[in-house]
Image 1 (spheres, rainbow, N blue to C red):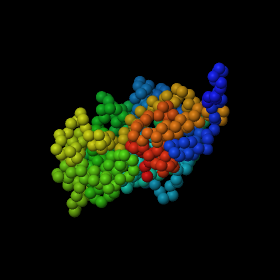
Image 2: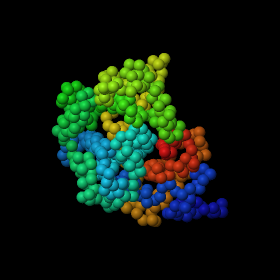
Image 3: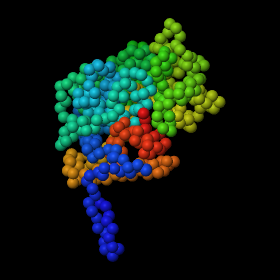
Image 4: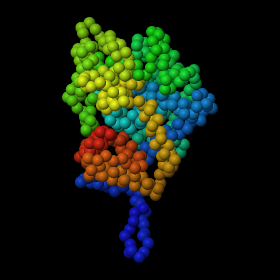
Amino acid sequence: MSRVEAPSDLPPTYTEYPTELPAQLPIGPHQVAPIVNVTELQAHLRLLGAIHKLKEVVQSQEDGIATTDRELGWIVFVNRAVYRFFAWTAATRQKTSPSLNETYIPPLDVIMVWHAYLLNPRSFFEDSRRMSTTYCTNLIAIEEMPLTLISSLIDPKTLDPLPASDERQRFFEETTNLPYDMPFITNRSDVFTLDCPFCANTNQLVRWVADGEKGFAQPKFVHTCEICGESFKKSNIGVRRFCEEVTRRRAGDRVFISETFLAPSTGLSAETSAVEIMTKVLKWMDSTYQVLQPIPAGSDVDTEATKLAKGLGYNYLLLSNALHRGARPNITPDPDRPIPRLQRISVAYSHAGLASLDLVGAILRQGSFIQKMAELGWTRPGRFDLVSESAPLVRSIARYHAFLDLMAANKTSFFVPTLVGPVFFSSLFIANRSKHDYIGYCKHSCLTRKYNFFAE
């Protein structure tokens, strides 16, 4: 509610907070149209509510892993969802594939992963631009989430996904070779396929959960390859991915290793400096493995990548040390005090999957925010359906603009917003639409470095 001036001898009087946004709000010297509207915010809250309910459903199963360990049951489900997301984003699309219409929208578990990835926009943007691969091309196609469309595919009363159309289900299944519906229940005997980083052969019997916490969804994952007999971990897979990327660049492909492609101060593409950084951090490896030279005549990417991976022992720590020796040859690496950017590069190759960040960890971290939204009642079905009840959303949008206005006025400081989270996160989804305006409104190095609103 807004305060109205009154005589000092009378108690203050108040008017109801507006339930509609003004045409313009201030950010620095500019008057701008609201960067997110109430409809988009309502759509995002419905999606958050659906994700929250999905977790409750998974953890309430009376069979499978969740019956004895609710948290592990959810963690396994999230791991399976990430696996399905990579299958969806790495698949070759037909030329007739739809744009972001209903047919293209994946199941809710995959949407959850997509949502988490976009909430790390700097990583998402770099991953979509630093290579010319099918995965990167597909990321560009989904860099703006159609929140309103997705919310229309969720039952507004139950928050359950509405039944998928035959076309939508068929598109996902034909694209990924996976069933549209993922089971809520995972048993200890359930397995999936995974390529061995040592011999590149596909293992058919990798478990999600195993004794000694050695399943893929557990912290001590290790699997003995069914073909070559080598035991491998997620970090071995990550190091192999690094070696393949470096070798593909040697073969003439357009490849920039993670955490080199964007300028730290702006979040904008910087290919020239990326080449300089890679030349520096790969210098030590080049002296032994010629990683900055074209691959030899008669050799191939797989052979050269394997040679480099063996030289690094498929070991994340050896990779980290090799990067340090290239960038700082006269300084002994200190594992307790790593150089931040070198640490970010090596961490990007410390896990399995195609993304530069651990998407499972990202989803689990964001779960605490979704839980808070649910506890506040903001994700409850129908909570803001009436215009008369939309004042909190209008106020959140106004407060978020005030946050940007504050940052625009304090370009050398870094601020963290209060719980205007739904607006803050929703604005990330439409950052593509507003990015050029953001640049002019509040050019702020801390904001660009942290959130990459300004990526082009």
